[in-house]
Length: 454
Image (cartoon, rainbow, N blue to C red; front, side, top):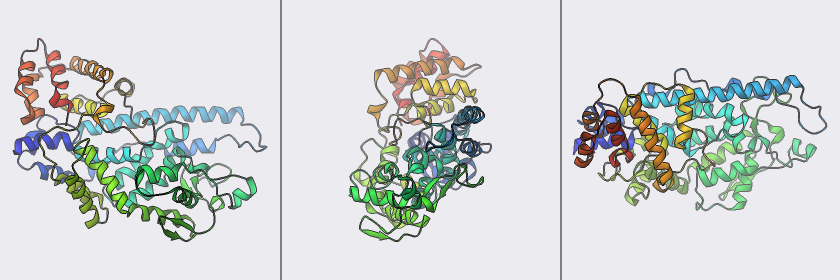
């Protein structure tokens, strides 16, 4: 069974096998995965550009507001447009770097784990502010904290400029705050609602509209530093501005929280992170992502128990996932998303880093460009979202293109057992062996059911 388990470890938990990975994992597949969690090196991108400086530049050159202020100068407009171009280019470079890391890293379980949390706390680059800050959310917050406690990750994510901008909290003002009374501005509930529905309790987690409103009140004041209002050092950062904060105590899920400024929202977020409904919701999502579209109750319960024992410690949760009852079940119950298919193909074929524009075109063609999920729910995680006829045709086209890139003496007949291991079906091996060319053999390998599923 260790040979089968090794093949499962590289694909179900990792980003796909490179030649030699399955052989390396065979002696102790679970230990091979857990060892990756103790090595913090591969979690970081050594030359990542988080675009924080770009966001500061955007805010510094932001055109004035509408209330009787002058129109932006031509110089301001030019500076804004130039910075948008720089931010788009920097985000493309970040996507290229994170892809190259996922393709080359020996710790691909770590990369899959980080991608799970990046999608759980999804932010799309839909406007200049999020384009300039979304790479920073993953690089500055999710990568360093993905193996800390869930509540620490939650607080850091919700107060990062990318999330504050994406879900409009940067524009939320308490009506009874100093700024609200003077300017007649009001609260925006978007971030509060998504925290409850998507990040913590889940849509059926037992919260009410009153809880949404109270959480939104606590979040007022958390904004992104702007020119002419905040200091140069604050511009582009997620900051707490007491002038925008709705005063008074707030009651969320039956608990009353004192008005202690920035800590009011932090305390509520930690309270939400410790709720049984949050534990249930997040553990179900983890089991769904890693194990099966319809996860077994035993696997969810196993993760919940680990969460409770270790107070939401995510490193312990990752180890519990590897030890869950269904972790090494032989059935392949997960269909790869387009990004997973792309990265696992590049790992299998040992494709060197691609030019940024080429990679962007591939992501666009297969339908899952990073940081562009269609909603705050993030990318879907079940087979029905990715297995339609058009989506399969796009995969075939990609597989043909990858097969055509191969040069040298690569033999798909020997590659197939190296990257699929004991999961290789004899019929698939026979089809690959009978292929009329190396390119066709590689396409058959990449499009095989064993490779498409994990």
